[in-house]
Figure 1: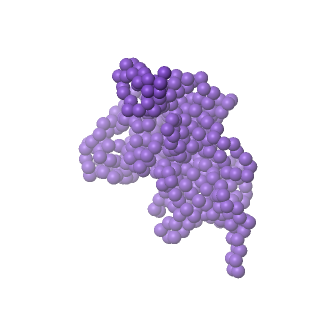
Figure 2: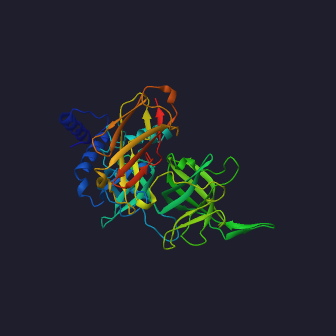
Figure 3: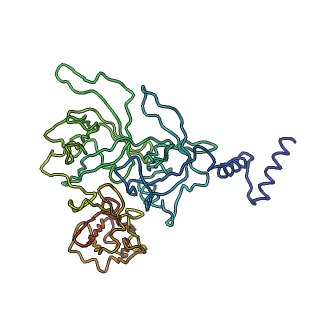
Length: 428
């Protein structure tokens, strides 16, 4: 059979079977490869059942290993975990590949679980390629799940792959928002600088630590607030260290968020630990559980914006929605409230017969009459509410805060959190 005869036969078979024509034989063969990939996917040793999500849909945000997925807010996804290169002690953490099925959707509509990527990331930040900047949980050979960050895309003629790195450090820091300060925490990726230094720099007058490192995060409404110099020309400081009495402290010297868009990158320069302004949080046994730089650098003590919890109950909650925005004059948005114990176990169903009191305000103003503006009805589940905002454009660019008080016997749990921050941005 000649090459030309093979070409005619291959194109004819496709045309007769699906009615679709391809302009080149290469595109036709690519389509056949995709079909073969789909048919043999589950039999491939690299195939994994994974879970993909952003920070605000992480129902176990304090874990980077051993996550579970009963009633999860994460999205199941099929992927192949591919070892691209191997680690050695003399170089930085190597990246690995993640590959999705050829049929995997890369754009989403309002009925899709991952629609929030379109509004919160593609539209807001201009992220071109799903799923750059998102987290993915991947099981190891024993079935234990680990948290990874999707960092970049490797385009190919055959099968597109994504570069991923393990989330290996749980950072705590203080966020400044005007006159307010908030405690924050998030898993990130550590990246070493390729340059090596002697550890100390000294000139005729000064001596200081000379060392650099990098941290990579998902770009979102929290990490976008990392700063180099503030309005007072003060450099942001972070503690990135093993939990010791004199931890290693750093100053932020560079912030990058466009290579690629979707990843927030920090370059850090080693600083000195200050026991007067930095704070080491300890548990009842004296173990360090969190480290904050510049915790006491002003008279304002940071508050925990992520949760508002009755301390004695050791229970915290989150209100989750598909996006952090609500459309003025739009349809109903469903909010789901989740409750967890101190070990991050989902205990929402324990409050099946509790009373739920939902409240709203605009920009924190409690005495504003919203009865003709906001409509709230019960959802399908006992822990859900549907909310709709009237077509009143006076409130565009305002922030809608939602609070829910749950009362069960004598236990009172307050959650003023929507997508962790407790806010909806009002849009057209």
